[in-house]
Amino acid sequence: KKFDASLSQGLEGYNISLLSIFVSYGEFIDSSSKSVAVDLGKPFRFQCPKHTAGFGTTYAWVKPSHIHLSRSERRGISPDGTLLIAYLTQEDIDKVNYDGIKCRIRAGSTYEDSGKLRLVKKNPQQKGRE
Image 1 (cartoon, helix red, strand yellow):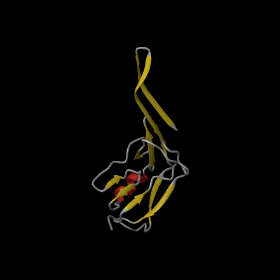
Image 2 (cartoon, rainbow, N blue to C red):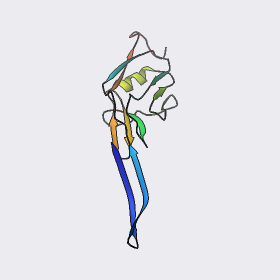
Image 3 (cartoon, rainbow, N blue to C red):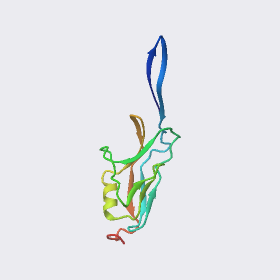
Image 4 (tube, helix red, strand yellow):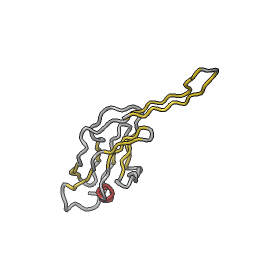
């Protein structure tokens, strides 16, 4: 997908391009939903699902309601879209699993979302930040 915008101004009969922006977001190769087994208290990283190359793209992890998963001192997103959590808590799992989250690739005013990510505890009996 491509977005091309140019600001042009006529000058003595000539069309001079003042600014040309070219951005392109990749398309997801596999847009199926994923469930990942996790342990509370452990670091977590999940790459934005495989997608074709893009240019001028940004990444976010969002809910279906378009609300971004908030970043914090424990939670962030790398430049390639990888979701990073220093240590998983039950609250993280609850936030991710409530409607799921999707990796969003944005270029200009266009975007594409991956399939949903959900987290499943390896040990359902695990409590708190063990």
